[in-house]
Image (cartoon, rainbow, N blue to C red; front, side, top):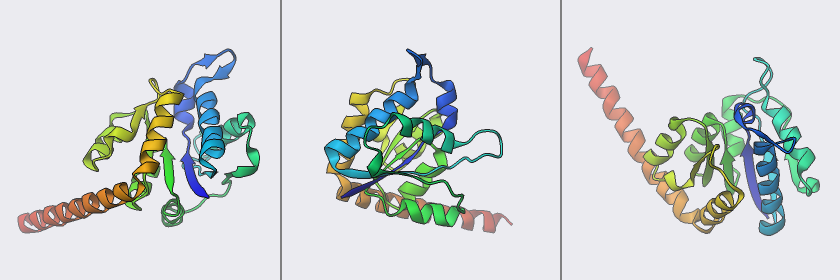
Length: 188
């Protein structure tokens, strides 16, 4: 059974229009999760990255999406708060990750997990481009169910290749960071 992680974003929810009294983000996310469960025979785990302190809480959006999902028995909502190391470790177990939070995307790709991104800022695309994964990014204003299905299916069909691509790119990033650190050291 495939294990798919999802990090939703309350800020995207706040930016999306309501269509026939339903938030478009909630509607599409519920449909894509049902698709993942039904057609891909997967389990889905929602992991919150922003919780409570600012009045913004991703768990609220996860619950709103959960209400619309038909296959609730294959869904888990993470309610507890975890530290960065624990979050990163959790993301490493997924076969696929859908990230709407920037740090979730950084964590999942650093754990070499194929990742589909729903972006609201240029930094998502730039990060995925640096990793050679830009084909798996869609902007929330343009996202559609067919587009997300295609990205998910493509990423799953290339899981092994994506893991290898991420591994190689991350090694390049690490080497570059070390070279930059040496340059700074030499300047001091």
